[in-house]
Image (cartoon, rainbow, N blue to C red; front, side, top):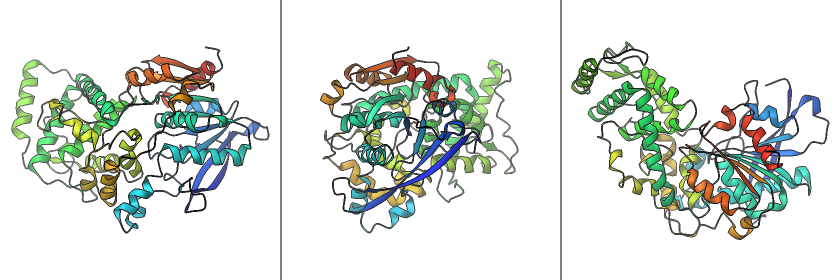
Length: 457
């Protein structure tokens, strides 16, 4: 840990269902962080709301993002593990398997949405701060939580900062995915324009997976549809490079890690005739029995697509848009049929992004215990609303938000529609960063958001 920080761990007991406070309870963990030189001062609190759903709060270290150091100049920061994540009574595959009936698990999971997280935060605020309001910083899904907070308990808030996470207040899951697929397709094409040989590698890997039964280290079969979920990487600032270097070590033609003979380095110069030869060689050898996927590649794919440490990301993804307007009914899966460029035999192969599909709960070991419960959640029709439109329209709490113009995950158009309807909102639109701009920019994004909220920018 960075020696300039001091930390204090807090554990709070909260009701599973805040409408029945005497019923079952959960433990919610939060870590207080303060600048060592100001630890004895009475500083204002800043609550950090992590992205997700299903993501635990960051752990402070010498490599902590610059926004944290900036915040600690003036605030005491609370890093909250939202219920079900990190050390907050985590929802894991083992925990899910303990429920006797899928309906019981589904009823349990229904208490892990934004409304319950905000109720936890208010309970914690009153315990730490009494009647004093605090400020919040919401990254991605943390912005969704912020709008729910402003809807449910604005009296607990002094100012709010949102990075890449203004939700469409009335957008259904169908609305969201109708906008998402074209953005993801464009991002994949941008990736192939930067690394054209990776289009060939991915098509070759997909053909190999179609022809052979290839297993990940945990025993799951690696399929083309699971391979395509690696597209989730592409919305982050370093996503293109992470995926490229993963693919760079994917193929072996002797089973011992020898680089595949048809691969080329991104820095090499290839003539048109060589490219044609490469494409033909790739197609001809796609299912060759002497071509294998390296252990390094298979291990990393397992880790990146297994949801071992964040199953709630998959389980709750579409419930973010459930607000009494009918079931979400596996919206991403239904929408896929409207985009023929996304077929598994397409060349180039288009990857998918932040979409969750019912097959994941059959194919992925870490999600199987949730399968029937997830289907029940997808069919639920009586989700309570998460946003109070009238209250948000009359909001007076300063809300400063950055909207990333090219955000692959959160639609900028929907974000700007929301900004126009929520009172006391100031928005900064930029294409300088991707979805992880809060961390990738050092202290720049948070500093500007704080200045916006204070009327200084």
